Length: 161
Image (cartoon, rainbow, N blue to C red; front, side):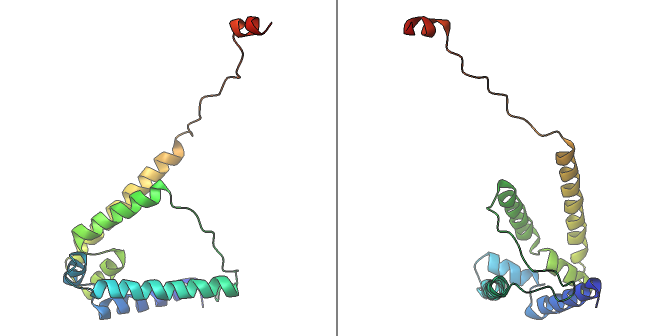
């Protein structure tokens, strides 16, 4: 099975799960973000613990990928400023739209009309990010000013003589 077909199948299962669980409904998202319902947090908690268990097993067993045969491995990095900024932007967008990218795709698949402007916003955000990334890579890296070697002043040299 090709990786594209596997990705399609996983995407369909993910979309069905989001739809079945009610995560495509802005009301469910809004109630969770307003702390009126714990359903959203239980859903995320279950996802987190499932992921933690899966990552633990993957790290312990060090298997190979089913489709490509490559060794499954990753490098843990410390959070950087870009991660914090990206998280804030994601959270603001999620709070304003009551949807994140997965449910938006599912909303489109269900024929829900409000998924269209959200998709436009999502695509514009991706294009803006791409433009910002290309500009950042096009600029030459800033170099710190060269430090001049410390040379004693003539007065200090006279004082030691």
